Image 1 (tube, one colour):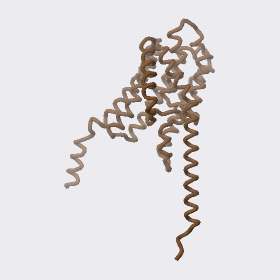
Image 2 (image 1 turned 90 degrees about the horizontal axis):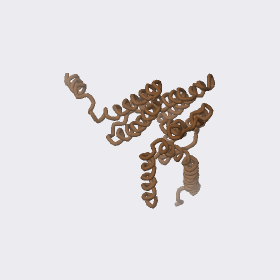
Image 3 (image 1 turned 180 degrees about the horizontal axis):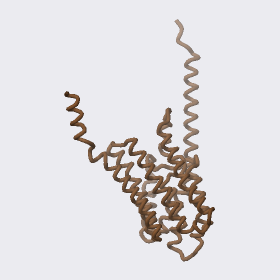
Length: 276
């Protein structure tokens, strides 16, 4: 009897508002991604790109809010992956198809299909890594494997954003857009380590230069949004070689430390217990 009463009271209490906030942000991002498709079908490409950028901002917030509030869950992680697939895989590909890839015929549609497939494969790999039996070293949390889906969407949309600012036809040419989609899709499913920016730390002597660089970028975005966002995407792409070098250096140090530990343990075993 007491157990039934306790269970009933627990059901009446339900979930706290704090547990719902991250999922609400994820659903808002999903709505923004779907709205981008609607704008694309109506030919309002600038609004479509803005909707995808809003989805990226909401996607960056939901996970951080969940961790701050201590309400992370597997349900939230799965919902976030489904939202990422639509917002940063399907939506950019369909918008770019409507803008230029439809002029490429069957090949243009094949390239359009490839991009969300790469996004789905990347997200599936990320989800399966969460269930790994042996957790990776803590330092790997500063890196993603491959380009994350929101960054991939930003990179894929660069030709379209450039076309908003310059009076030229080449940024929207099917060959240019298709090539960018293929390259970005390959980066998404690659094994290249890329900076996460979630757990990374800025050295003390680089704090002020970093703030200055951010201020300059925000100024460019405020004065010329499309060029600013394009430069932001290109700046992120330029960091990929540095992230690979930093990852390899850290992995080498990790292996050397492990090897040194094995040598010390082996010597301790060989020396045996002290004699009488």
